[in-house]
Length: 636
Image (cartoon, rainbow, N blue to C red):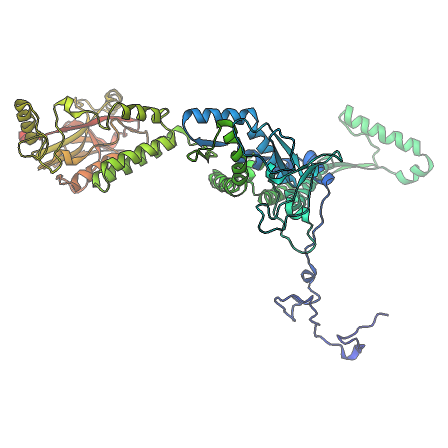
């Protein structure tokens, strides 16, 4: 009989059994609840601990070769880090030479292979100079000094003891590398080797020098998550075969099995044969036949959850890892993709760039003969916007630049140079750099030569365009100067303003109007934007960024009677471009007869038509450019 002991080892009498739970802990601090047992010796979770079980190279490569999830987790980031590669910042001839050198040595492919080896546990890239002393530091790179580039995994190399001389450039690196296979293989100086490490391993007690140097395989951290997902998927696949089981209850089955097994076997075989070939079950009246259906409800969701854990452990979105559509209501996957690209960009900057910089220290001089300081590179974008997205971005940039120009916050020359630099960096206009250089060599300036139009630029200290006393250089032709001055004075004088856009797809709207009973349709279909009886400076009204404006089909549309007496039968619609232009002009001094602006097209003036029966036009509306006119006498 088992005997209970107290915390001092003394027997506990049954008559005086204690209800106090001994709070024996493993020495770690934490929350303890003696009533519930949380955090005490009876709490199972206090016995949880982390234990690292290293995997052999054979286990790592077996998982990589045989399991699709492990293979994709290793390969996808390695491929994405070099997929778009980089953009050289140099002149055209230098870029062509450097790209040719990269192709000749297959730099992109070998860097990708080295990254994959690093994720498997460590890799290295050997730079060959063709000399007979590989144990010596790499020679000073020069024209055609790089002869070959080879990639190795960590198990193909032996590393020497760690360099512990803190004054050495190679402190913390192996004193040498050696290719495995032959005893007489020469030792290789670390300056000739570029290392691609695995997951960092802190130099804690129990960590070997090799594991600390090479790092861990990514397989170590994701192994359990991958195995759980694979086991669930395989188990589900096996359950499908047992989803439906036939059950035969044969009279005297067990007794007949003992006495005449062959007859029982034949009977079962005949029954199965009849079921499969004759599509029927043939039994005695005392026999029974039933089917058991196995419920698989919840299994797909469980597998999905386990695969999501794998994606999280691998730091790869499930849409990229599993090749599936985004999950969730209204989900596009853009956020997941953006986070993944941020992770890849971080790895390029923190992990890949130092290795590529060491490679460039040899590759660039070998290709060009020297290492110009102005040569650099940028990692190419991981995803390219669509033409529509690029156009919208360019429009926003152009609008922002126009705001700066209109506000006169920066010198025009600075704005011009900054805009040219932005367009060059965006590479949106192919050949722009060359065209700008040719224009500069020809003495051309932005904006063209206004003197060809008979317009003389403003003087440095103000004044009109070449008018007398303007402070600028007067036009040598007095007659032309007089015409220019008169034109400027007349054009810049404040005037009343009527701005409209003509309807270019009139036929579509006329067809709709006739179908709704309109008979006297206006000949001039247009949209009024501004009707200012107050004189304004036309030049201050600015301009629309869109010459032709298309209002897409659909949206709110109404047909109502407008005007004091309701004689104008108009189609009302919404268009942000029109509303914003009206507001912009009113802010700059234009008047408007109505408190609010509502875009509309006057279909008919007068006439007797029941608007309650009219269905609004819902098709596309195409408007032409803005037309500026002066309000004529009589309000026309």
